Length: 495
Image: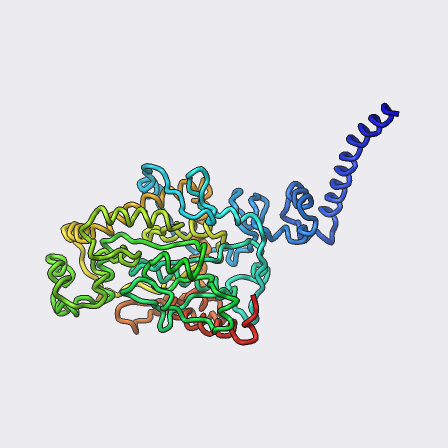
């Protein structure tokens, strides 16, 4: 009796797993070759299907939409973790190039990458920085298209489940290309009904004071109870982490920096600081200012004065009274390094967007852009080598800030992997075709004397080009209007 029992038990231990395995394999083969399910798994391998079956049979119908690391996916590039979205554009007239020597020159790495400060960001792995949030590969997020939407995504993409990161705080810095980046975020959120923390008036929270929740246009009281937080904050705001965390907890933080020499010259011209200094009728007013900047800084009241010395540090919450305190400046830089997930670099704008795309698990379509224009010659100033030295001395804080993050930027490029160059070229092909399609190259808008702006191609009658070309000044009222609809009384109890 005892021998019979053990014999049966042994047979059970062997036969049962074999039966289960055969049944699972048969079911997998049936699903994989069944014509009715072919559409769902055309780009998936048998191994990925088996894994999905093991986890949850019900997920088979959405397996093609998941953001997974597979070289067989239609939008992946050499195994890069991307999302199954169909690129809008397949050809391009020209290709912007980043020289190999330029990249190699900037890839001289020192030290180690800084660990991120929040576990929820998914950016720590034994202290080494990771560009991609690991949640990108897990829980799918369905995105329903908005009725009547002229989207930059095609109908298939609008229901993609690539699980993008949507909780974002973007700190704009002045005269760095930050408006173009802000409009990328706004377009992404506008097309997905995401909520934005918006200023009460205009497109700026406050130019002189640290950000406060009091600056935000509030939700209606009933709606606010079920929606205490927002998805994004991207309008001009001076960095103040405690207040920002109260508005968007566990957000991904992004900002952008520019070489302090052209950045200060650009700010000086664009904000017409010479007028308040009494130099507007002088030849080379910027050079006159830089010959004795402290005099004008302390005795004259001119537009955007706080952006005329270490303006980028100021936008990131640094007290201008500490401009000569190198220790305080370095401490602030260390804080920014720990608290921001990505610091973009204006001089490597496209490269920065590739890093942003991977960080947020977005698609190439999501980061397409058209620059608003080029600063007019009337608002430019000559910069000699001697003047460059004076600017760097006067803006020593911004120089330290920029040099630090220019170095860490190239570490991130290195950590991205061998696909970086391929992805960059692919993106530039797409973006140049967007420019060629959307912009009228024979016409320039000169209404704003400070900027020669591009104009849209009149042959493009849909909203596609408008949505990509629109800046944050144009998006802000659209978002306000959209959020009035979202927060209407009938939606007050929606979650």
